[in-house]
Image (cartoon, rainbow, N blue to C red; front, side, top):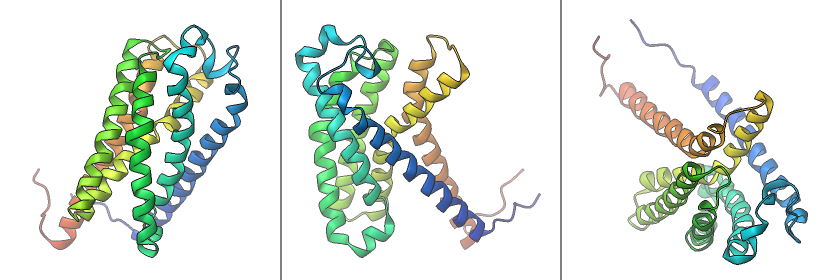
Length: 230
């Protein structure tokens, strides 16, 4: 059986459309988050994310929460510039400066605050472990991305930082899944914990599959890989 024929122009066009839609979604979530600040300062415990959190909000959780809702949107916006190849090629110095700022925000603010908030996850202990795993994974990919950059391993650096940004975008995916749950109607108590895990594992899995497919196609085009055996 012959392999399907790919049309590069169609793939590029579809990729650009999906990229524009993804950017629009990130910007929308950032705008919604910033718009909700009026419910966070002063805190309104009657609705939204803070509902039911008054009992423990006034401790260290408060500082973790405010740190997270400020640093999180910033990392999402900075990430849009960092994963843009045109910006990187045209402004390499700014790419490095923004990159160091991004990593500092992740390691010093986003990850510690996310870890603290994880143990108070409203969806229960399964979701809490998922959020803690997300925080550790985000910090690890950022650190590995920096190490690859300092060793001038550009391809590895790109991949690690893409993983890092996809993990940051878990907040966006989680909102989409939350909206899906609302559309579907009443869902069981399993839905929110599952959505928490899927919000970062699913994008990572999709990225790894895409990278493996790109490598396979590149090797096939160069004649290194022959037709797979039956």
